[in-house]
Length: 440
Image (tube, rainbow, N blue to C red):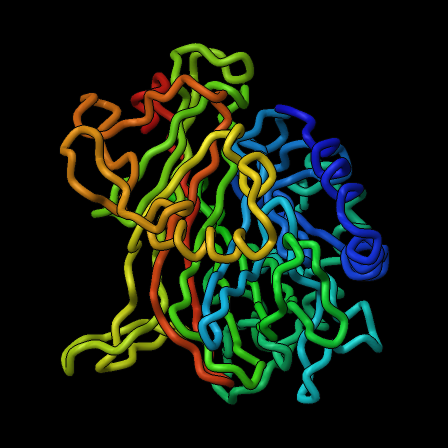
């Protein structure tokens, strides 16, 4: 574990005063900045309603605990970013250590709904809450049985289907009835949901002061309490272009700051055939996990939709669309702490938008040139795609500039006209073998 939020405080204080004021309104309002936990199986993690994931802001530390009930972490932070061009200008949205999002929807008038902050909360449901002893949540520090039960019951009854939240339509009438239907991702044992946006009427410039797009993001995360999925969870990002702008050359990035126990001895890599990025421990003994050290992988399950061949089939909203296809992972990148952009390599705000657009393409973000695999001397968009078990190919053996790793799983390009919707789904999977390599 580590405490690194003093770094964010220093950055915030270095911004112009108007940026700090906007952040205070948009991101720190106690009525508008909430969290819940996904913790139905062996994992417990934080979900905030402004894009932040897997961090414990209350303690200023990591927030993705495995096994649940311990103080052991596999992630310090994760997020989801998108980069695009509008009339040749670069734009950036989403969240990493910083967020460009505020809770709530974008209304038909192009502004956030501000009348009822309770609508902006992270909703959470558990399909068996009425019969469960809720010991999982009690042991995770969420309060008494009565308190937890009441929160589940409230979110079940008020599940915001009309705002975009998914549910099982038991009577197939297209309407949500809390006495008949089951809220949450269909079939899941526990689901969290919220909606956020980079609202143009009340913008947050905390994501490095990037320009506002007008994107609404509906987030769903779910998990199962079954033996074969106890170390797995899923996340869905539904992006809706509520601007009047045509978004060109969009790339998305699943951004991860892994901490496999002790934060400074991680290694990362990717498997392009599995659409997978992963992190593992570089040594056989970890200060936190000892000799039994897990590894963690992020797998793109459903990429953005693009035009396909007549017989292609894409998945969207759990349905097939003929003539379209889902993009796979199109590139993978990583960097070490000492090259954490934009602060440590002297980028300006506008450089950073272009930097990310290039990085999400698997290119050198400073030059725009292809990255060369040092083991083949050939260009590649899949950095560190070798095999750390056999030590074949390009593997992460960089011991210079610190061991603290971040990585990104990217997909694109695709376009979004005004009113278009895209859905991206990925899974998080934990492997726990006899040692650090077997866990991979």
